[in-house]
Length: 487
Ligand code: AMP
Ligand code: ZN
Image (cartoon, rainbow, N blue to C red):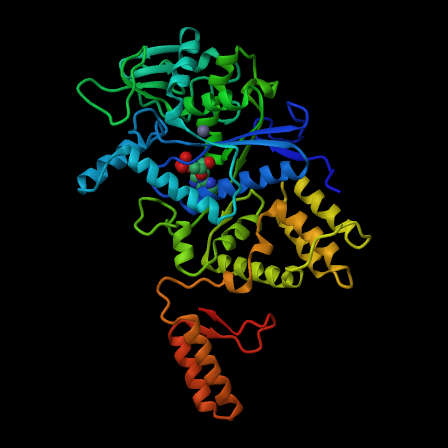
């Protein structure tokens, strides 16, 4: 059964809590989406694999899920103080300097679509809505107007939120003292270092590609405002779960929470619902030692780079699932290769179930495996253990295949590895710089087999060496029966 109580780690209380929906039978989830000034790196995509596992788990447990992921096409600055530039405006200016087309709306569209490609390739389900920040400017202005008198003050550079006007400011981050220690006080005239911009005025004499009229002059919204507004408009306060990467726990989400408290006239954060959401969840980072994750590095780690090198994108999903979302995960090509091998084993173990119709997983041999799976995923989304339950299920012997298929399907509904949508052939991608086609390789292997049958080992070795020189490793005696792989 899938009825173990779902325990989730709430960053606001720093403890595991049983999920109790705000609206009976429903789950409303908001995920901070990408800033579309550049391609997402694979670390960014870890955040959406995590949110997807959360959503799939809630659906599997029978909650009617409404999941919102936003697209940040305005407001996110290059620095977490308020003095940086808007990331999109900066990218547009850079492109213009390089003589490229620099229409900011086109840039946002291009990178939004690139992000959606990655979402699809990673088998991340479509949310109920992709909410685009610039579609909500009027709502942001209404929201800002409603809190301005009591909670904000105006400076030459914009409208600022006074963080001393709400109770428990910064509790989520655990790092902020009364005078905002540890924060960057980059704007002249702020009352407290932690105060932040709600509205950023366009400086006199300048023109931004994205700017709107407001009671505080022409300008653009602060980044934190958009998520408060879209969360409230689309899900209603309080909703169930708000997610993001762990960096958001420090500034973006404490600021969203402060705005939410101001908007609904809520009290302090001893009652988590006053924050706008009942549970705040954060995935830890994917880290990489050589700095390739930085988007300012030339060849940075995009999903497409993995694909170009011949790794199926779901191998990266597998890599994410092998770690708990709250643990740091270190990226390496060896690790990715190992994840791909594990995925191959799973797909091959499921091969016999491909054409079988699912019946019922209600069998004394299978029920404990479903319980193991449910216990793992209900324990704050413990995907590493859930994966082992899947492998146990595939290994069960002497069982009706329809029953086995039913069990594996259920598990894959949550894990999203698309086990029955893949074959061993579809998992083997051609690296972009591959020198040989599959047909060339098969042909060489046929000739090699013939040479071996003729005991002409000089020829067979020469063929093997030639393949190796072209990046193909011959796998004699591979237990899974793979004859070759790309090395
Ligand atoms: P951004 O596009 O910068 O707004 O980031 C999109 C999402 O990726 C946010 O939820 C970030 O917290 C998250 N994120 C950024 N870097 C990493 C990383 N290295 N590993 C995991 N998540 C990340
Ligand atoms: Zn956000």
